[in-house]
Amino acid sequence: MNSLSQAEEYLLQQVRRGSPDGWSQLVNRYQGRLLAFAQSKLKRRSDAEDIVQETFIGFLKGLDRFRGEASLETYLFTILRRKIVDSYRSGKARDVCLLQDVYDSRRSEDRDSDPFQKIAGDDPTASTYLRRDEQLDRQRHALADALLELANGYKQSLNFRDLQIVELLFYAQFGNRDVAQVVDISEKAVAVIKHRCLKQVREHIQRLKFSDIVRHEQFESLLTQVWESLRPSCPKRSTIGAFLLETLDDAWQQYVHFHLHTLGCHFCRANLEDLQKQTRSDDTVKLRNRIMESTVGFLRS
Ligand SMILES: [Zn+2]
Image (cartoon, rainbow, N blue to C red; front, side, top):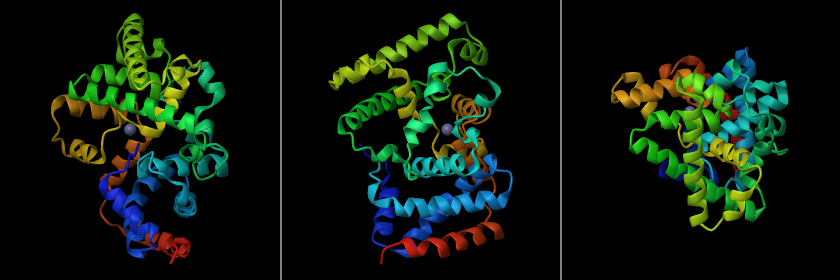
């Protein structure tokens, strides 16, 4: 499976060839959202800038092993989070959304096993995408396929209520009771929707002949990991832009509002903030130049 858009493929090709121009474009494209994310975790701007710079260095160093299973954005965010956790011992960087700071209801088995640890592994360059284990890779792909179908189905039918519930369950890792409280429906109704959704995912995987993961005892935790590396419900950056301009249909406008402000997805909030101050300020240019100077040596010539 390849999660890269054509534009990303093209940029990546340029960078792999060692083109400083391509690299500059890539840095330009992602530095703002990465910085916004880092600043939400680290109070000092200089620390945030340092860690973004290191993220780009880490990206170039691990470039050979990146196979495009996640979008460039998600891959860069994964490296960044890993670095924040390592350098600043900031456990909060593991959280994917604001609501997790407010509620403390994550399923205990997931908290104990720390899905982020499993995703990023020991390798500072986001080893989730570099796993050698082919069987596990194929299972992840089957699951990713199923989750994409699920999320797209909800979006196409404008069933944003169920999408929100599924996000709370598998992205934020909330228990049924807290989900019920957030979306204001009964706990039983949440259980029914969860059951229906898991059934759909399982059937999809069985069609792809991967029934062994369906029986996997940590199926839900694997599902959360794949959800995090794929982010199938996160609105596109262009959709967040349209949300800012209030040009979306009501149902979409409300959903994106939920995702950004109720769930509080950290990655999408970083995009929102970046879009809001996309005026090319002096600071942005300075940071870009600094990243270029410190990373261009890692490009192969
Ligand atoms: Zn998001």
